[in-house]
Length: 488
Image 1 (spheres, one colour):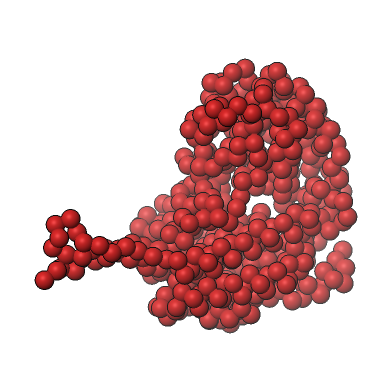
Image 2 (tube, one colour; image 1 turned 90 degrees about the horizontal axis):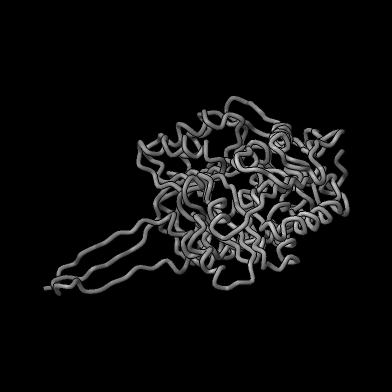
């Protein structure tokens, strides 16, 4: 049940679509319910967009594009900075809202407000640093100008697991570059995006620059937007399977795409590792966001000499976790997002056990309301187990032993994914070798959390295309133009 503070906050969140600077109902009057995964209770009912609403949102973005592209970079920067400042003022509200609709503990939700806000601050600074180059051609017959320009209207599809940070990570660079956008948040956690766009409105963002459609018919509504020749960019964060379909759809109009897709992160612990740091890193890399992160460590590849001790230490840590609704004091593990996530975790653990693995703690769903799964440690996982091939997306730590560096590298790279890897070793030379040998777009060396607004986030292989954040992030929303001017 929600208390008065929660009720008051939910009443502030818009329940309509935001198109052309106007909050309005869906054209067909349809609605969808948003539930609290810790209780199963409906906490708010919002507009459920139709195909026509999606087209209207793109119409608004197209209509606003030229004026927004011509807006002074300093003006765009100031709006993003104002949004950052407003977010700091309202951080408690945003943290609570994320906990209500997604389930993460309130302390972690506060951390996401900090992380998500940094994209606003970073790209407010990058907006005024878009540059090119100018110089003579080698023959001396002309001057070459290389300039950067906004790609045009963008369609941004965000996931449910980090509802604020994934919105700011896409919206902020698009706005900084001079692009207008249509945002489609995940059906399971749309409220944070709606409230954030209201904040952008308060920060002075012109009408039509950002438009939001919430819908229970994602593919039906998204398809016509992607097929529209006026759209110039598609950015998606989610599963590889869905990303592959979106890439196929985007090919017809040769859209610029950014795809942050699935992960299967290896967490490699060598025999010389500082085990205290490795265990601390494991807790962060595995159980942050209840294990529901694309950067979550999925396969703990631990040297046989220290595997038992590592397993004992992480089990002791897991034993101290407290499961519950994220708003309760001291809770460290909230619910999984839905029943399917619980069933998947249980199935993966069961398969590992059938193949010879041992459950040291947890391994079961929690009885009662909500979609909770016990934080789990599984050791002795054998190659070929489903838990080593599939993205777990839950609080399950699976340990597989190895004997030498080459085997560790082979096990780590034995996946179609390549988002992030983690390595713990005190051998500097080995650490440098791992940078070159592990096939991932990001790596944490003796650290369990790597995400930062100033760093390029993204993967290789089937983990995606393009980068978000960092100097590279704004260039995903710009195209390069070369101009030749003759001399004489």
